[in-house]
Length: 423
Ligand code: ASP
Ligand code: MG
Image (tube, rainbow, N blue to C red; front, side, top):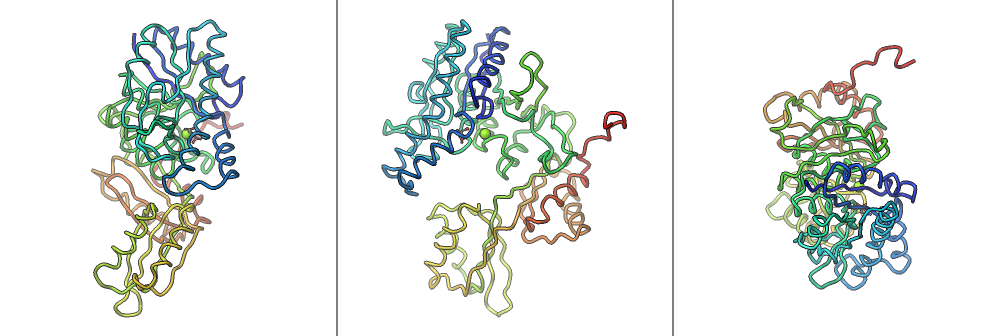
């Protein structure tokens, strides 16, 4: 009997009707003879509602303190409700099922509440229950900190709960059910040409998740890659007796047909900051980025350019929009020591990334990207690269246009449909 993990996101458990649909997907795997653990998110909108209640009660402190711990106590409740409801529905259908909260497994985490990392998952109790024929219905997103308090894994953390559980119980695969039927070459809302990717490597999926493709939490892909757990992304809105093929996320060696570029991914949640006229001498950049790091502000693209004034440089970087105000405050509070003249910031910027394993071996991918944008008259503000990704920062007003143009330029569009299919 193979063990498998099935994970259902918020829209898949949005109400009792949707939870009944989930039970049909679970039944299918049970009938196929698998031992099943189901990981659930909170019902759609519930985590936001709970975070709102915490905010009404008093904003959580940015550092670890009592209020942040209680914040986790509150927001983890969303998953507790869905796991209990799905267990009830399965029991009413005559199955043996029980809910598991993070602390009951236990799924142990680090102490950083709100963004805790999984440190250990015990497979003994849950594995025994599964081997005894019981369906394990697990609350995603939550665990237990070394202090014994409830912790949460960061937004989208149920994906990570599911993949880590799959690795811990030696599951043959982890199926992530969501409201889209797979991972796409680009956001289908931006381009009608977007098409479902049948197979994608862990590495590419990791880059996509880290630049803001919302399908999977980045950490979940890291874990899948480390433990070689195959993931499938499937739609819980497909009929349970005939689900679509979805997208398989696997080792690059298991992908026969490899494109040079696999996806074009925009990230609208970027903001840029330029620190103007910083003295061009050792230690200034270090000071800027150390201050930002101390304030737990994540930085992405960094560019330094010589300023018109001799002996000075301008340093630009990007960060998430949510961090922008804090970044400006932190830098302004250290203005004397850094020695800059002023700060400029811009929220109206988007990072567009092209991602593909083929870049390792093929030249010209960057050239095509820059030429395509130049032909469309789109100005590039920043550039950054990794081995399998090139990102540019552009004005948000041009972002959709740029995504479509790049998607075309790398030939990612769907083959033209026959005329009658469009009629
Ligand atoms: N409910 C949590 C969230 O909305 C975790 C998850 O759904 O993955 O972020
Ligand atoms: Mg999610």
